[in-house]
Image 1 (cartoon, one colour):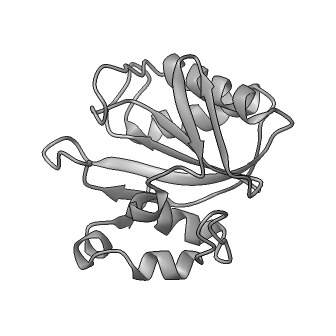
Image 2: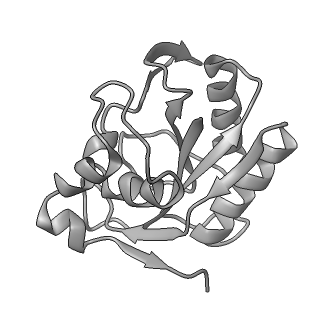
Length: 170
């Protein structure tokens, strides 16, 4: 199972945060990546600066014949097509796509000068990943820690549990 986290907290020339996520999904499909399932939209405060615009996030299960490196390259291309700027870590952005799980493998590689670690290193602390992930893969187990998705959600702080909201697209 290949899982992607897709988020947006800025509008782009194409539209709002929801539109950015939808365009990211359709662009992935144009690159031969099959979307198997996608979660609902979840809204949460920006991290680490909660004064930045709120994020909309989803998790998508995909099928791809690409290697992790080729998939990462495609994801970066999709982000760039939505005017993603890489100025400062955790800055607001039109599109952010992370590889959360690649067939249960534990990976570390470079792509276009950026280091990728799969599963994503901070996944276990991120409500905006765990809640949508649980929705589409309720029996998912972290490849490295072997923790269940239910256990990881239980470990979140009370604030993290309260600060995420499933929302409908306007």
